[in-house]
Length: 164
Image (cartoon, rainbow, N blue to C red; front, side):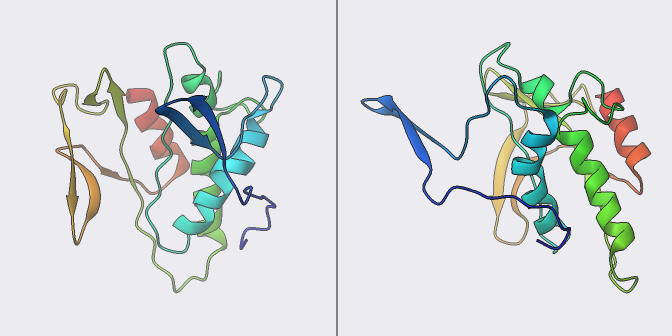
């Protein structure tokens, strides 16, 4: 990896379930896992590809009270030890931009959506409560009507997170 972080993804995902309900996963994190361990596995590879010019998405899925918000945001997004995957990823992206060749131009956009009961809600525009996922040959997969804000700093992204 270009950022110097070490990570590994198992070559064969594990599967759990019975009958038609089979679920694949790359890794389970025990309750004692730190926010940093989760970020190193999930966020670091994403940041590396984003800095190479690819779009990146981190998606948390699970039942109510399963730890999605804790994992994604953490109990305190400003605390270096307890910040979740999103604040750590944002920091790493902007650190990577700072270290990148000055001839490379970066454009960073942020959006913040929630999917609940199969309805997509834009957390930056509370009027957008039933958005649709679309696919376009040029744009790829996107959420139609979702607010995307251009951001230039970690602080701007954190402001968006507080608003959402």
